[in-house]
Amino acid sequence: MEKDVAPGIIEKVNKDFESKIDSSAIHVLEEKAANGAATYEDAYKYAEKIGEARSKALQTHVTAEALPEGKIYYNIADRLMNDSLSTDHEMVAEYAAKAQQAINEKAGIKLKAQKAELEQDRIDSFINGLCGSEGNPIEDVLWKLGEPVVTHARTVVDSTIKKNAEFQHKAGLKATITRKAAPRCCDWCTDLEGDYTYPNVPREVFQRHDHCKCTVDYEGKKLKAYESGGKAHSFQAPDEGRLETFTKRDTIEKLNKEKRRKELVDQQKQIEKIEKTPFYSFKSLSAAARKFFVEDEKTIKNTDYYIMPGTYVTGVKVISTGDKIREVDRLINTYKLPNGELTKARDWYKVRGRADVTDGVRTFSREIHWYQAENIGKVEFKFPSNKKQR
Image (cartoon, rainbow, N blue to C red; front, side, top):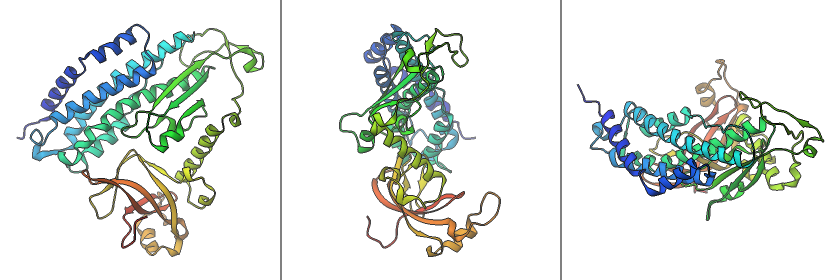
């Protein structure tokens, strides 16, 4: 009977991780939180330290020599990453909640800080991408134990801010979200920089790509009487006890006072429309809306490459529709609707875009093509054949 190597690897990773977080930098941050002086800037620093320590521990002990056949199989990845990422989540979520509590007390808001919930779907997606259907050679996926692990820790802070903004907004407070771009960041992050009043916040504000060091901050504020038509109200926080009396604002600040914010909100609605409908409205969409987020790996047909998860496919454009698609008959017969009925030729689109693709070693930007139909989705990603790359 083959030995179960997972417990031994998990034990080594945890011991190494614990030794790496026993540092003066971590202790200083933890002392600030204990004294009620932590900020979200501190929370991001703490998340980065936790993520880096975990990443280094994983890359040290998850090796070809330690794994059966040098591959990381699902049963190993499942236990290892659930143990590692759930622990990281708990540590960062606890710290971020303390930062939020300090913010509440400083603002005189008598609300309990909300702790981000564990996003199991995110961890499951991480595991599936790490091990594949029949296990992956660790050399091919070692990079996924690097920066993506640090990014996971940072997203816990993002989730904490989002949850508290929603909670305090429902309780009648004005919730202001501020995203600040890191120095020399990408155009996507630069476009998102600015102040937003919850709930008019594009979901992208709470998202990040690998190596993204942009920060999100939050400020909750009690409203004055003139902000709610001169009438004061008492509110009950959801699932919480009675709060102090304060005022509620009945109308949201006009979006045209923050032109850039309005544009981002409108673009987000257009992006959501793309994800749910065919492409007939593309001509009216802004350039920023002609993209979609890749949450899970998208395999490139007949190659060892795949589209990198956590990135965007950009420059999306329809290049052929309906009967003009050479393989439309095959698509109709291959992909049936959920009710078992066949699609029609007019339902299908051939689309192109540009994406970051990798084979686990090399990564580069490449034009890709795929087919798409309403209620079917995007299928058969592939490289264009015998054509000059755009």
